[in-house]
Image 1 (cartoon, rainbow, N blue to C red):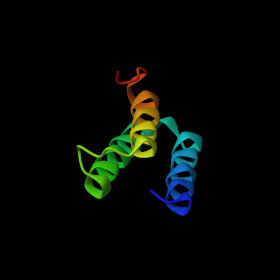
Image 2 (spheres, rainbow, N blue to C red):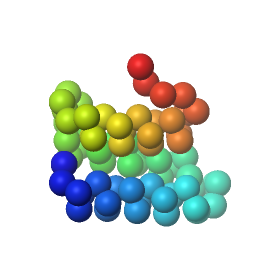
Image 3 (cartoon, helix red, strand yellow):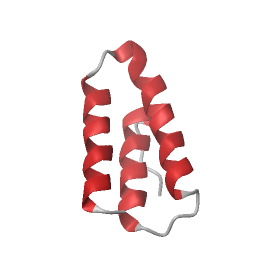
Image 4 (spheres, rainbow, N blue to C red):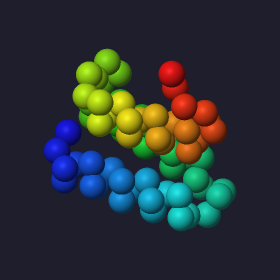
Length: 65
C-alpha cells in the first residue's frame, strides 16, 4: 500500500465517520468489502491489516486479534 492509497482510504473513513448514523454501518460494511476486494483476504501488509482493523472496530466496536 502506498502513502497515497492510505491517504485515500483514511479520507474515506473520515467521511463515513462524519456522516449520518443511519448510513454509517452500511458504508463501513462496504468499505470492509472494498478493502478485501482490493488487497485480498490474506494480505500480509501491516498497513492494510491496521486499516482493516480500524474500520472493523468502527463498525463492530472491537478489534480483531
